[in-house]
Length: 128
Image (cartoon, rainbow, N blue to C red; front, side, top):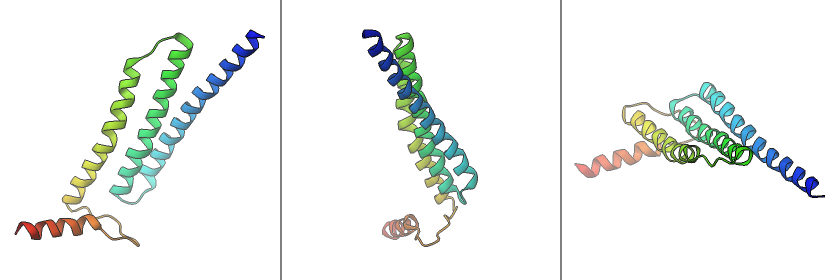
């Protein structure tokens, strides 16, 4: 009876690991498709930062769980990689898009307004 319970636990843990790996792969694939298909810099940066951040995090979580469950190794490097990826990728995407906007790259504004441009104009008027 004990071996049956151990077998079920092992199967459930393998399913959880596979879920993280497949989910991470899906997000990375959707990110690469978004980078190719989206029309302007801002939507491409959105795809590059959001989806790839989730994809990399999913793959690293799956790798961490595999290493911990199969080999008993708690990898601090994988945990740090997850942390730094989740912290730095969105910030870098935001800064790149902000620099692009300040250098004159206009977003495609179908059915939207460019609120950041209006904010910059108001700020410049206050500075004068």
